[in-house]
Length: 346
Ligand SMILES: Cc1cc2nc3c(=O)[nH]c(=O)nc-3n(C[C@H](O)[C@H](O)[C@H](O)COP(=O)(O)OP(=O)(O)OC[C@H]3O[C@@H](n4cnc5c(N)ncnc54)[C@H](O)[C@@H]3O)c2cc1C
Image (cartoon, rainbow, N blue to C red):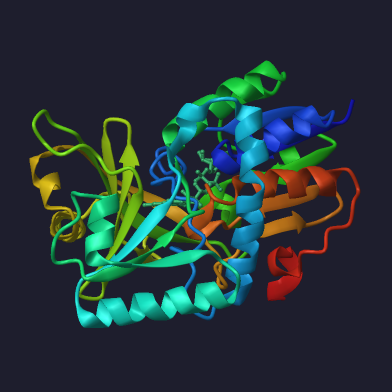
């Protein structure tokens, strides 16, 4: 049996380990279990519409393909509790916010992504806790969210069941691994292990709020707001919500900053006033592994080394497709995905 050493046990390393082990590889994951792993901090949105900027056609097309892998992935994980929401509502407050959302909805619709325009009243019929200040928006009916921490727990169990070994420790040099093939999934640390790989940190802060007795229940949809030009999202959990997220490109500091937390709280309460009564459970910061074009780097680095990294804001959305592509590549299939090719930056 051929051996595969995976460096990094975040959502990408775990998903790839599962698929590779099921395809016949003997897999070992190496991870020091460090505090800077992004996967546990994330909000868990499978953001196709919500994460596409108008005009980013390449991102949208890859995100759609990534989403298409989720039904089979969820079936494999066999835990419906991983699903946190089945659709997303985009909501705008002032006329500029509404104008921006209308433009985004038109662009998505023209590209075949199903969106449904909504008045403020229709938004509140779907989500009664949304503020009366919200004027218009749209429903992205296919934009799900998952509970990323539950996903990580389910993946951890699943890889153990299929015989993946886990070794706790930091890898300093990929050449030290004895395996036939090596897969680099170390998130923001990837560039340290493969100098020149264009992956850099983008710090993000999120808050976890717990439902409190007497407060309105958490929403059923992801609610993404544009509040006077500033974006905020509220992602449901069974017992509360995740509010996010700030973005500071190039910042690798792991402490949440007071100003970022204050902005998130203010915007979330503006969008959903009842959150004022929730409990503040945590404020966390994580490092998104970003590439210059916002798309991941998946493919061969040399004749023994592969990369699956640089998933930026969308590693949860893209974990299933990444695992499938890596399994196909390891099996020797050629992959026609120039958008994610490691060589595209050279
Ligand atoms: C605030 C925030 C919100 C987000 N929200 C979303 C969202 O809603 N939807 C979405 O799709 N994505 C979201 N993301 C992005 C997502 O979290 C990342 O794209 C994804 O987690 C990247 O996964 P990864 O496995 O590549 O990296 P990580 O989760 O960072 O894992 C990398 C692993 O590599 C290990 N490692 C590092 N160095 C070494 C070494 N030398 N040897 C061995 N192991 C090593 C680390 O310990 C870590 O466990 C968000 C990110 C942030 C920060």
